[in-house]
Amino acid sequence: MGTAFAAANLGVLIGPPLSGLLDQHAGPAAPFVFGTVLVALDAAGRAFLLPEVEAERGPRLPFRQLMANPVIRLFAGAMALGSGLWALLESTLPLDMDQRLGLSASKIGLCFAASALAHTFTSPLMGRLSDRIGRVKVLRMGLLLAVILLPLPVLLPRPWMVVLAMMGLGSTASFIMSPCSPAVADQVERQGSSSFASAFSILNLAYSVGLMVGPLVGGVLVQGLGLPVALSLCGLTFGGYLLATRRFTV
Image (cartoon, rainbow, N blue to C red; front, side, top):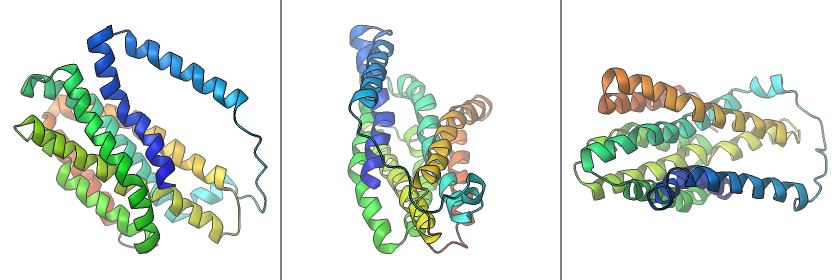
Protein backbone atom coordinates (compact mmCIF):
# COMPACT_ATOMS: atom_id res chain seq x y z
CA MET A 1 0.00 0.00 0.00
CA GLY A 2 2.93 2.32 0.66
CA THR A 3 4.17 1.72 -2.89
CA ALA A 4 0.71 2.38 -4.31
CA PHE A 5 0.36 5.66 -2.45
CA ALA A 6 3.87 6.67 -3.46
CA ALA A 7 2.70 6.50 -7.07
CA ALA A 8 -0.54 8.33 -6.31
CA ASN A 9 1.14 11.13 -4.40
CA LEU A 10 3.90 11.39 -6.96
CA GLY A 11 1.33 12.79 -9.37
CA VAL A 12 0.36 15.49 -6.89
CA LEU A 13 3.93 16.34 -6.00
CA ILE A 14 5.42 16.30 -9.49
CA GLY A 15 2.71 18.58 -10.91
CA PRO A 16 4.34 21.86 -9.78
CA PRO A 17 7.83 21.18 -11.21
CA LEU A 18 6.41 19.90 -14.48
CA SER A 19 4.05 22.86 -14.72
CA GLY A 20 6.91 25.25 -14.03
CA LEU A 21 8.98 23.82 -16.86
CA LEU A 22 6.06 23.82 -19.29
CA ASP A 23 5.11 27.38 -18.36
CA GLN A 24 8.64 28.68 -18.79
CA HIS A 25 9.38 26.94 -22.08
CA ALA A 26 5.97 26.60 -23.76
CA GLY A 27 3.73 29.25 -22.23
CA PRO A 28 1.11 29.38 -19.44
CA ALA A 29 -1.44 27.36 -21.42
CA ALA A 30 0.91 24.38 -21.82
CA PRO A 31 0.30 22.81 -18.36
CA PHE A 32 -3.46 22.84 -18.94
CA VAL A 33 -3.17 21.29 -22.40
CA PHE A 34 -0.82 18.62 -21.06
CA GLY A 35 -3.18 17.91 -18.17
CA THR A 36 -6.09 17.52 -20.57
CA VAL A 37 -4.13 14.98 -22.62
CA LEU A 38 -3.29 13.01 -19.46
CA VAL A 39 -6.96 12.92 -18.41
CA ALA A 40 -7.96 11.65 -21.86
CA LEU A 41 -5.29 8.93 -21.77
CA ASP A 42 -6.35 7.91 -18.26
CA ALA A 43 -10.00 7.68 -19.30
CA ALA A 44 -9.08 5.54 -22.29
CA GLY A 45 -6.96 3.25 -20.12
CA ARG A 46 -9.76 2.78 -17.60
CA ALA A 47 -12.26 2.05 -20.38
CA PHE A 48 -10.20 -0.45 -22.39
CA LEU A 49 -7.25 -1.77 -20.36
CA LEU A 50 -8.52 -2.53 -16.85
CA PRO A 51 -9.72 -6.12 -16.31
CA GLU A 52 -13.03 -6.98 -14.73
CA VAL A 53 -12.86 -7.08 -10.94
CA GLU A 54 -14.76 -9.60 -8.84
CA ALA A 55 -17.30 -8.21 -6.42
CA GLU A 56 -16.42 -8.09 -2.73
CA ARG A 57 -17.06 -11.27 -0.77
CA GLY A 58 -18.01 -11.61 2.85
CA PRO A 59 -20.23 -9.36 4.94
CA ARG A 60 -20.35 -5.77 3.80
CA LEU A 61 -19.96 -3.01 6.34
CA PRO A 62 -22.17 0.05 5.91
CA PHE A 63 -20.46 3.40 5.56
CA ARG A 64 -21.80 4.54 8.93
CA GLN A 65 -20.26 1.53 10.68
CA LEU A 66 -16.90 2.16 9.04
CA MET A 67 -16.96 5.79 10.09
CA ALA A 68 -17.82 4.73 13.66
CA ASN A 69 -14.46 2.98 13.92
CA PRO A 70 -12.11 5.37 15.79
CA VAL A 71 -8.97 4.00 14.11
CA ILE A 72 -10.43 4.58 10.64
CA ARG A 73 -11.37 8.12 11.65
CA LEU A 74 -7.88 8.72 13.03
CA PHE A 75 -6.15 7.71 9.82
CA ALA A 76 -8.71 9.44 7.62
CA GLY A 77 -7.86 12.62 9.48
CA ALA A 78 -4.16 11.93 9.02
CA MET A 79 -4.71 11.48 5.28
CA ALA A 80 -6.49 14.83 5.12
CA LEU A 81 -3.63 16.49 7.00
CA GLY A 82 -1.03 14.92 4.71
CA SER A 83 -2.72 16.04 1.51
CA GLY A 84 -3.55 19.43 3.02
CA LEU A 85 0.13 19.89 3.83
CA TRP A 86 1.10 19.73 0.17
CA ALA A 87 -1.86 21.74 -1.04
CA LEU A 88 -0.85 24.46 1.41
CA LEU A 89 2.79 24.47 0.32
CA GLU A 90 1.95 24.45 -3.38
CA SER A 91 -0.35 27.43 -2.98
CA THR A 92 1.98 29.57 -0.83
CA LEU A 93 5.65 28.68 -1.30
CA PRO A 94 6.16 29.53 -5.01
CA LEU A 95 5.48 33.24 -4.46
CA ASP A 96 7.87 33.32 -1.50
CA MET A 97 10.57 31.52 -3.47
CA ASP A 98 10.15 34.00 -6.29
CA GLN A 99 10.15 37.18 -4.19
CA ARG A 100 12.56 36.23 -1.40
CA LEU A 101 15.02 33.95 -3.21
CA GLY A 102 14.60 35.15 -6.80
CA LEU A 103 13.99 31.66 -8.18
CA SER A 104 12.55 31.15 -11.65
CA ALA A 105 9.49 29.00 -12.32
CA SER A 106 11.61 26.03 -13.38
CA LYS A 107 13.84 26.26 -10.31
CA ILE A 108 10.81 26.49 -8.04
CA GLY A 109 9.51 23.41 -9.78
CA LEU A 110 12.78 21.59 -9.11
CA CYS A 111 12.43 22.33 -5.39
CA PHE A 112 9.10 20.54 -5.42
CA ALA A 113 10.59 17.79 -7.58
CA ALA A 114 13.15 17.15 -4.83
CA SER A 115 10.34 16.67 -2.33
CA ALA A 116 8.52 14.37 -4.76
CA LEU A 117 11.65 12.27 -5.19
CA ALA A 118 12.14 11.98 -1.43
CA HIS A 119 8.50 11.00 -0.98
CA THR A 120 8.64 8.38 -3.74
CA PHE A 121 11.64 6.62 -2.21
CA THR A 122 10.50 6.80 1.41
CA SER A 123 6.81 5.92 1.07
CA PRO A 124 7.34 2.15 0.56
CA LEU A 125 9.91 2.18 3.36
CA MET A 126 7.45 3.80 5.74
CA GLY A 127 4.83 1.23 4.79
CA ARG A 128 7.23 -1.57 5.70
CA LEU A 129 8.24 0.21 8.88
CA SER A 130 4.59 0.45 9.92
CA ASP A 131 4.31 -3.32 9.39
CA ARG A 132 7.17 -3.82 11.86
CA ILE A 133 6.60 -1.26 14.63
CA GLY A 134 2.92 -0.31 14.21
CA ARG A 135 0.88 2.16 12.16
CA VAL A 136 0.37 4.75 14.88
CA LYS A 137 4.06 4.92 15.81
CA VAL A 138 5.01 5.80 12.23
CA LEU A 139 2.17 8.33 12.06
CA ARG A 140 3.41 9.96 15.26
CA MET A 141 6.90 10.30 13.82
CA GLY A 142 5.47 12.07 10.78
CA LEU A 143 3.33 14.44 12.82
CA LEU A 144 6.32 15.40 14.96
CA LEU A 145 8.47 15.98 11.88
CA ALA A 146 5.75 18.20 10.40
CA VAL A 147 5.78 20.42 13.50
CA ILE A 148 9.54 20.87 13.16
CA LEU A 149 9.97 21.08 9.39
CA LEU A 150 6.89 22.92 8.13
CA PRO A 151 8.12 26.50 8.81
CA LEU A 152 11.66 25.88 7.53
CA PRO A 153 11.21 26.52 3.77
CA VAL A 154 10.29 30.18 4.44
CA LEU A 155 12.96 30.73 7.09
CA LEU A 156 16.07 29.28 5.45
CA PRO A 157 18.15 31.85 3.51
CA ARG A 158 19.72 29.69 0.78
CA PRO A 159 18.01 27.80 -2.05
CA TRP A 160 19.94 24.58 -1.34
CA MET A 161 18.78 24.73 2.27
CA VAL A 162 15.20 25.11 1.09
CA VAL A 163 15.65 22.06 -1.16
CA LEU A 164 16.81 20.00 1.83
CA ALA A 165 13.82 21.19 3.84
CA MET A 166 11.48 20.28 0.99
CA MET A 167 13.01 16.81 0.81
CA GLY A 168 12.43 16.49 4.54
CA LEU A 169 8.80 17.45 4.08
CA GLY A 170 8.47 14.92 1.26
CA SER A 171 9.67 12.22 3.64
CA THR A 172 7.33 13.57 6.31
CA ALA A 173 4.39 13.05 3.98
CA SER A 174 5.43 9.39 3.70
CA PHE A 175 5.44 9.00 7.48
CA ILE A 176 1.93 10.46 7.69
CA MET A 177 0.17 8.94 4.68
CA SER A 178 1.82 5.56 4.05
CA PRO A 179 0.39 3.87 7.18
CA CYS A 180 -3.16 5.07 6.46
CA SER A 181 -4.33 2.48 3.95
CA PRO A 182 -2.82 -0.54 5.74
CA ALA A 183 -4.29 0.67 9.03
CA VAL A 184 -7.76 0.95 7.49
CA ALA A 185 -7.39 -2.46 5.84
CA ASP A 186 -6.44 -3.93 9.22
CA GLN A 187 -9.67 -2.64 10.74
CA VAL A 188 -11.79 -4.07 7.93
CA GLU A 189 -10.15 -7.48 8.33
CA ARG A 190 -10.62 -7.45 12.11
CA GLN A 191 -14.34 -7.01 11.57
CA GLY A 192 -14.41 -10.09 9.34
CA SER A 193 -15.37 -8.13 6.26
CA SER A 194 -13.98 -7.52 2.81
CA SER A 195 -15.42 -4.03 2.35
CA PHE A 196 -12.03 -2.66 1.43
CA ALA A 197 -13.31 -0.51 -1.43
CA SER A 198 -15.81 1.21 0.85
CA ALA A 199 -13.14 1.78 3.50
CA PHE A 200 -10.60 3.12 1.03
CA SER A 201 -13.23 5.49 -0.36
CA ILE A 202 -13.18 7.18 3.06
CA LEU A 203 -9.44 7.77 2.65
CA ASN A 204 -9.96 9.09 -0.87
CA LEU A 205 -12.61 11.47 0.44
CA ALA A 206 -10.28 12.63 3.23
CA TYR A 207 -7.47 13.11 0.71
CA SER A 208 -9.71 15.28 -1.46
CA VAL A 209 -10.89 17.30 1.53
CA GLY A 210 -7.27 18.03 2.44
CA LEU A 211 -6.49 19.18 -1.09
CA MET A 212 -9.50 21.51 -0.99
CA VAL A 213 -9.16 22.91 2.54
CA GLY A 214 -5.36 23.30 2.61
CA PRO A 215 -5.13 26.23 0.16
CA LEU A 216 -8.22 27.94 1.63
CA VAL A 217 -6.95 27.85 5.22
CA GLY A 218 -3.41 28.65 4.13
CA GLY A 219 -4.52 31.62 2.06
CA VAL A 220 -6.51 33.14 4.91
CA LEU A 221 -3.66 32.67 7.40
CA VAL A 222 -0.99 33.97 5.04
CA GLN A 223 -3.01 37.06 4.16
CA GLY A 224 -3.71 37.85 7.80
CA LEU A 225 -0.49 36.78 9.56
CA GLY A 226 2.23 36.35 6.95
CA LEU A 227 3.73 33.15 5.60
CA PRO A 228 6.19 32.25 8.42
CA VAL A 229 3.56 32.62 11.14
CA ALA A 230 0.94 30.83 9.03
CA LEU A 231 3.17 27.80 8.46
CA SER A 232 4.13 27.73 12.12
CA LEU A 233 0.47 27.68 13.13
CA CYS A 234 -0.22 24.91 10.64
CA GLY A 235 2.68 23.00 12.17
CA LEU A 236 1.02 23.34 15.56
CA THR A 237 -2.07 21.73 14.03
CA PHE A 238 -0.01 18.63 13.38
CA GLY A 239 1.21 18.83 16.97
CA GLY A 240 -2.37 18.91 18.19
CA TYR A 241 -3.19 15.85 16.12
CA LEU A 242 -0.14 14.14 17.58
CA LEU A 243 -1.64 14.59 21.05
CA ALA A 244 -4.89 13.08 19.79
CA THR A 245 -3.09 9.80 18.95
CA ARG A 246 -2.10 9.12 22.56
CA ARG A 247 -4.92 6.64 23.23
CA PHE A 248 -4.23 4.57 20.12
CA THR A 249 -1.83 1.62 20.07
CA VAL A 250 -2.39 -0.05 16.66
